Length: 110
Image (cartoon, rainbow, N blue to C red; front, side):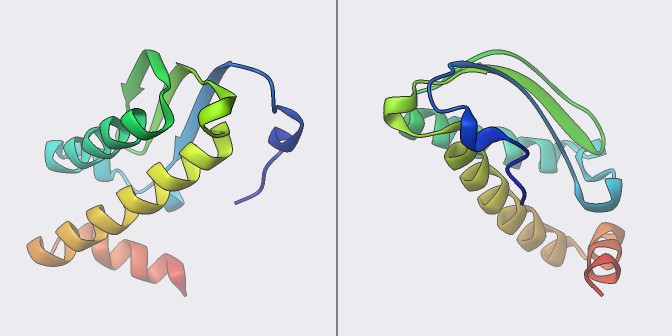
């Protein structure tokens, strides 16, 4: 995951963030996967102490605006954790349900 200049943003507090699912697989079109993302966001919100001003979850990506306190961690730290653990949890649920999305993720891994 490239930083795209975020390493320069150590004192900023307000961020507009967009992140996409690998190959734009529309995994968030099913509520259970959006719920996993929301659960992980809530978990890391308690850890990193950031405020959410607005968010929208689309089928293959999400946008949000947050206020982050850099003394609790950088935006890169919190996004890394949210993305990593949400991906693990979603992949685990995809495996349980035998979802077609799982095949798409494995194909893109090759």
